[in-house]
Amino acid sequence: MRFSKLYAPTTKDAPKDATLPSHKFLLRGGFIKQSGSGLYSFLPLGKIVLDKIRDIVKQEMDNSGAQEIQMGIVTNAELWKQSGRYDVFGKELCRLKDRKNNEFVLGPTHEEVVVDIVKNIITSYKQLPLHLYQITTKFRDEARPRFGLLRGREFIMKDGYSFHDSEESLKNEFDLMEKTYRKIFVELGLDFRVVDADSGAIGGSGSKEFMVLANNGEDDIVVCDSCKYAANIEAAKRAKKTTDIEPPEADFAKFHTPTPVKDSIKHIAEFFKVDEFYIIKSVIKKAIYKDEEKIISFFIRGCDTLQETKALNACGALELVDASEDEVSQAGFNPGFCGPIGLEDDAEFYIDSELKEEKNLICGANEKNYHFIGVSMFNFKDSRYKDLIQVKADDICPDCKGKLSVTKGIEVGHIFQLGQKYAAAMNAKFLDRNGKAQPFYMGCYGIGVSRLVAVMIEASHDEKGCIWNRQTAPYLLDIIVSNIKDEEQNNFANKLYEKLDKKRVLIDDRKERFGFKMSDFELLGFPYALIVGKSLKDGFVELIDRKTLEKQKLKKDEIFDILQGLLS
Ligand code: ATP
Ligand code: MG
Image 1: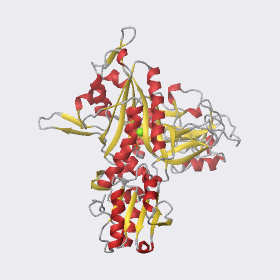
Image 2: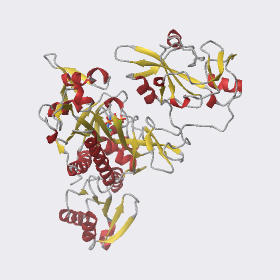
Image 3: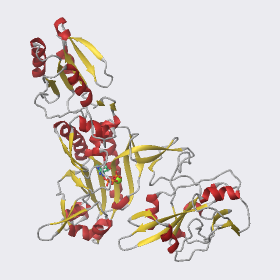
Image 4: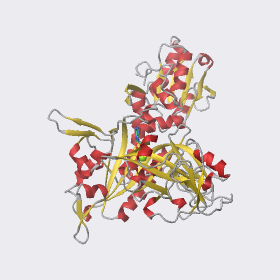
């Protein structure tokens, strides 16, 4: 490709809201152009990278036996009503109407459509398993679209859906997809971990995420330093927390504890001279459901933090928000002095599982300025106990005795075992071996294809720009003609270019200064540049490695063979 013809509008500065390297360099390099909040167009260089990633994903998906299809982005709302997700998906689901008032949604994911595609056509276990996938546009009206392609509203996903006649068959495909995804991310050259995940709004049981380790990741992931255990913080577990600090042994009693509501745990710990481990903390939230709101208290140890996704799963709400002091009081909880002992049977509260059957605890007495001491946790129904706490660095691994640490990751893939949830809701059934009608068992599998374009840069860049690897570079080599007016340089560079693979080689033939071309090369991040400059007179050209920025002086007569070697 001739740079003089290429539409790659590079700029020196990035917009202020572009804080991450990938966001900055993709905009500055003219890989993408923003057209609205969370909306981007791919320009020629960006499109080449996107297609390269797409090709790698497609190749491995095809190898796994999955078949590519393409579903529409505009989806009949009726299907979403059948599955029950029309009302519960929340504001991310963009709902729209046509001129005849028919309702539609812009597909944020395509379980409903794909179930409708096989329903009444796949009717027997003999036609199963089947895996259909697509690589297309999704729309999610994200609350905070940010970081460029990392969290857009419109983005490109590879989403696959498998259908099975049994859990076992589903599990086999799930394992095959884990292997397939591993291959894809290895091929892309990414440093990633496969982690246990929360299943979120899609539902189902058993899901794993593929996380690329990156300082700028939005996800916290918990990893063990001694074994393979790794989990998203939303789903991470730990061995039950213990302490060597002596418990405050006392008979059950009510104690006058005048303390401010704010920071009450710290004050109570000081007041009784006990460790926060032995205090029960109440975290009160307003839970939003489809048709109602509830004020819920979550009880955890004073030294722990409430994990919001776990809390959300515990109460089954659509969203948790902060509750005001008035709302808390009206719901019958005493702000700053709320404890599980003595609450009404119908009170809305959950207790962290690690507190089950624990003794020698201190908690609020549900009365201003009073706490209970010598509290034991024996008299609560099992359904009150849920895993509610956020795992922290230095907690103990649930699988071995290793130490856990917390690191940042970017989610690039997510695989789910959905089970029969969607097929049952949409009445999509097959006849099993015994002639009995059963809903399909389903799995679903996503990869953030457009997000990966940005992830490649987060994983590999320097302060000057992108550093693409061979698998994803838009061009492998940039031949820079140092002085375009110099006939010898121009002729040599052009002859070389004509003999090389034009799909992989760019020739910078623009009438620009050398420094300008070099900084574009550094910003755009092609793996190599060949400088055809002053030393050509003496029979030399210079090869630059973008990663190290090291220069190698090479004989002009040998350069063709060297470049052929690099490009092959
Ligand atoms: P996240 O937790 O990052 O919001 P998600 O769990 O909602 O993602 P999935 O429903 O699992 O996402 O979608 C599959 C893949 O699609 C994700 O692993 C991610 O790589 C990609 N993806 C999801 N949301 C976006 C987005 N807003 N912009 C770009 N890619 C996205
Ligand atoms: Mg996910």
